[in-house]
Each structure stands twice: as structure tokens, then as C-alpha cells.
Image (cartoon, rainbow, N blue to C red; front, side):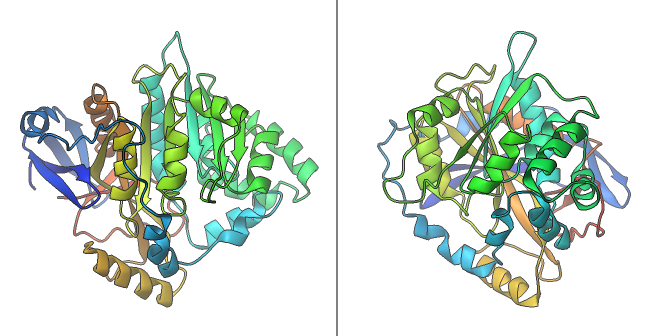
Length: 383
């Protein structure tokens, strides 16, 4: 096993610099047939010594013209659409459709989100998360409660009414059955009005914004900007690609202005391999962030059918992305962003999650095939 990993620093939308970090040291053993890594010692110092001017992309806000959102159209054509899952007044339809394809993104990303929240909050201050693409607030529920994603699916399938008022009441009672984190608040952002209405009313979210910022001329209201300004952790579990840099840029204009997280404004995201991260990486750079594409992948869901499998692999080939043609899973890359003085700490926090004993880690090249219904968290490490 190699002793170094790759971090990717985006210089511009057309190219990137790759740095091999020999300082990253792993102690690894086998666990359940998978590679479980237990310790990481140092990182990013070597990268900082060799960084070329401009690769952190810290231009003045607004100095980079936004890429057109059509950059993501081909990727969206390749995969199945679940748009109708987000139009119901309660989460039942959404969760049924997600369960049918073993959707796992929220579960896999939760350890990364929890670790970032822990690092951003302390006894004197709480963290405030902006969840882009929050839908019915499932990621917030995983973050703040002791429930797993399977618990949520089971509750809404077996116990919760599909009538809005009754489901809201039952959801509130369900959340109160177990301890809830009090050191974090979550503001949800989504294009689906029904989804965010339910999530906020049921107390899955602490605040919500229902708006489509992909529409030309769309902007946040003053109240919405204030909600975004008070957040210090931007989170997205596979939503980038469904939304483009147009939405991300509009949110970053306000994000973190009044936040008080100990790491400053930070972002933790998973981006489907179908979509080029450089489009949003450049937007983060123009807002004063360093964007790091980590050597870590998580499974999103299974392919709907062979046609989607073939279309997605064809698109990945066009992008020059390595893939396992035998796998029936779609994958996403884990990315983070922070101000230059906090990016090393955020990368350290995130990679420590990826190599922790609680997370099952596979080397790149080994097919990642979680068993159907497996509740464990899987990540794939790129060597």
C-alpha cells in the first residue's frame, strides 16, 4: 500500500495541480475484508511549501464570471430523475424511492458532517449548518439525533401517517424519544417548497429557505440572506450538479458573514462523479476559500436499471474518470473548503474520519459493493 495520498488544488476551471503528500502516514489493518485505516499524522505542510501562486484561487469576490449551469446538463441526462420524490407533503414517497435504490449518501456523509460540527463548536458557541439540498431534513435528523437512516425509513414506512398534520405531530414525538444535540442548528435550503415546509414544521430543520436560485434573476430575500449569513458550515450531500455554481455563488455571497464557528466559514460536500467539481471550486475560490478535492469517495445509491448504468459509465469515460464497470453503485467525491488559515485543519479533520476504525475503507480499484440494507458506513480511498 502506498504511503501517500493525492490532494487536488484547483487553479482554474481548465486545470489543476496535483501534489503527492508523503507526510501522510497510515497504520492499517484488515477488518471484515476491507481496509480499515486507524491513524493519520501530518498533512498539507508539504503542499504549502510547493504550492504555485494562484492555486488557492483567492480572487476578489465576484471577479470570476460564473460558468453557465449547462455544464451539468449532460451529467443530469445520464442519470435517472427523482424529481417527483420531492413534491409530496410528507417524506414517505421520497424515502420509498430512496430505499428502492439503497440510497446511502446521507448516511455516509454524516460522520464527516458531525466531525466538522464538533470542530466548529465549543462550550461558548454552537455551530449553524446550511444544508444545500436538504429536502425533507434527513441529514439534519442524522446529525442531531441518535437515529440512523434505516430508522427513519422504518418510522415513515410503518408508523407515520401520510397526512401532513398528523405526520408532523408524529415526527416531533419520534424525535423526542431520543436525545437531540443542542450545540448545532440547521438551516435547510432546497428548491422544493413542500419538502422544506414539512422539515421545518416537523422540527427537523431550525430554519428553511425554499427557492430556486438557478432561475435567471432569482435572489435571496433579506430574511433569507440573514439566515445564510448566520451559518458557518455549508453542507451538501450530493446536491451539487443538481444545482450549479449559480446557486452556490449566490449563497456564498452571504454565507458566514455573521457566523461564529471556530474554524470560520467552512464547507463539507460530496459531489457525484458525473459532475466536474472545478465549476464550483472556482466559485469558492472567487469568494476567498481554498477548495480541496479529497482522495475519498462515498457510495450514493445503486443504479436504477442497466440503461442508467451504461449511460453513467459512458459519461464517466467522457470525463476521463476511472470507474468499475462491474459495480452497480454510483459514487461521489468528498470535497471541503475553508479560508486559507483553516484549510489544513479542516482537511485533517475530514481525513481522520475517513481513516477511523468506525468507517470501513477500501482501496481504489477494489469494487465497493455494500450488501443491500447494510447499515455500516463505507468510504473508498483513492491511491
